Length: 193
Image 1 (tube, rainbow, N blue to C red):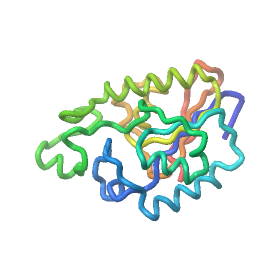
Image 2 (cartoon, one colour; image 1 turned 135 degrees about the vertical axis):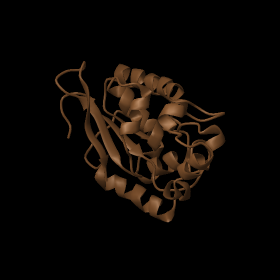
Image 3 (cartoon, one colour; image 1 turned 90 degrees about the horizontal axis):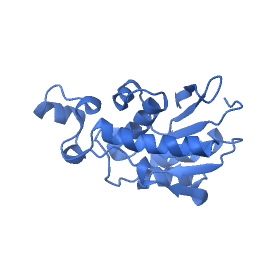
């Protein structure tokens, strides 16, 4: 998978009760399930042989625990800008429940009352991308689905709403990188299970 250019490895946190049931989990700290912990431990094998100049994690317990169980907890830097989308009034609610009260709602288009909109998450993703490009090295990131989807969209120069076109499973690994030179950002691997 690797090449001569820096690569950014993105890991979505392990399964939680809320991720399993489809409840929007932004800032609520939900622990990993037993299955989520087991999958996080398997990341050690999946990431074996790779070298990272830095490991960054969202402040959420689910991301930090996934990072630690994967064997990277001791050197991880917690970055507030890697936090999941703030769902505001929709925290802990499923999309089906939201649609019952707000037909046609779409997260990436409509955002969340008392929470963030795509542009807000995009601004945080842009700050992360700026730091990644300044570091110019291979970095491992642990975070959550919707934030990582926006990060991928912004990496490619798409608007934050472009994150709607990416899907991420728990404990999946994705890789951002470059094609011919550092002016050609690409996705080198996505949602690898």
